[in-house]
Amino acid sequence: MLNQVYRLVSPRQFEVETVAEEVDADDLIVRPKFLSICHADTRYFFGQHSQAALRAKLPMALIHEAVGEVVYDPRNEYKPGTLVAMVPNTPVKKDSIIQENYLPSSRFRSSGYDGFMQEYVCLRRDRAITVPSDFDPHMAAFIEMVSVGVQALTKLESTMDEDQRVIGIWGDGNLGYITATLVKQIFPDSQLLVFGRHQSKLDYFSFADKTYLVDDIPADVKVSQALECTGGQGSEAAIQQIIQHIQPMGTAILMGVSENPVGIDTRSVLAEGLTLRGVSRSSREDFKRAVDILSSSPVTRERLQNLVGYVQKVSSIQDITNFFDSALTNYWGKEVMEWDV
Ligand SMILES: NC(=O)C1=CN([C@@H]2O[C@H](COP(=O)(O)OP(=O)(O)OC[C@H]3O[C@@H](n4cnc5c(N)ncnc54)[C@H](OP(=O)(O)O)[C@@H]3O)[C@@H](O)[C@H]2O)C=CC1
Ligand SMILES: O=C(CO)[C@H](O)[C@H](O)COP(=O)(O)O
Ligand SMILES: [Zn+2]
Image 1 (cartoon, protein in one colour):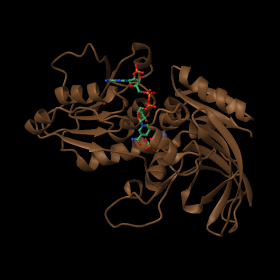
Image 2 (spheres, rainbow, N blue to C red; image 1 turned 180 degrees about the vertical axis):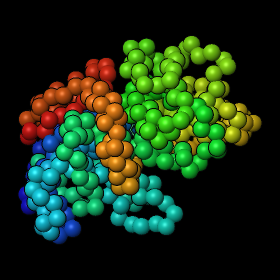
Image 3 (spheres, protein in one colour; image 1 turned 90 degrees about the horizontal axis):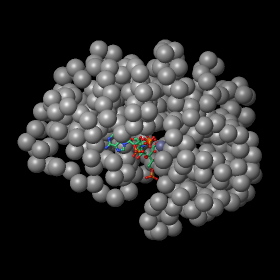
């Protein structure tokens, strides 16, 4: 099959390339419909990586958050038109200990392998998760980020001590918001505190028990467990505050991506017996749990619809470039492309 792939060839420059795809019975052909942007994509688009990293990864199609319609299934298991969320991680090896999203051999789309900015995606069938028909498709576009929140809270469940009284989230953006909605489902009896830098963003977290501006946290506020959802240099200050406000022996899940190493006060980590656990990406199981949570909780779906921040139809390379530029100035929520190329 000949396919048109929209690749970033250098910062801010896309080119369309025709690629011959080999389709076997294990694959599905999916037409991408709604694509949403992650910070990882904007870091490539704006060239916020070292020259060596850009040379190693580009040209590459961006975007790892998307839903699309099945157009062809050689095994006829999926009806044409079925909306599926596409899992961007494709494992090529199995390991009895290391999960698929932590195996260096796995192929993650839009980080070294072509992402979903394509005319058609040739998708291994175990990478497709059916999206229920009552989901808003703009919200469904970022199920991948919801699955990362699920991965984080699943890891928190298996790592933390028994103290579930207070869960603290640092970060008042997309990942913080998604993770906060999931805390309300996965830890329904816990108090949820959210710590951010913008009152106008914290106002969206109306379902949290309390929100704090990070320059105004009372010294006696304590959280049992914490999740860092900030990224960039902001991670350093967030991790420092988590160390100050977490109970001894608490667990902090770190999710924000920083291009440069950040400093951590290890003396306090040791003295308080803290666990810092990194979480990256997600697995098929996390997608399934994410869809199950959304299916059984209309209120979570409604909250996540509030995170649809900017929607635009794109039909050309110029539209795609404009869309990424708009993402830079969008203040709240996820940017979703209606993919019409
Ligand atoms: N681990 C994983 O698999 C994944 C990681 N990520 C990463 O997560 C990070 C966040 O993504 P996203 O939510 O989309 O980004 P956003 O920009 O939407 O959100 C980050 C928010 O955190 C705020 N912030 C910065 N510093 C602090 C601080 N010290 N304490 C509290 N809040 C702070 C930011 O404010 P301001 O804008 O003023 O700095 C911003 O509002 C990124 O690095 C992204 O790459 C995303 C998806 C998956
Ligand atoms: O966003 C993510 C998962 O949803 C990851 O943070 C992203 O895949 C990291 O990729 P890279 O190493 O290319 O920045
Ligand atoms: Zn991402």
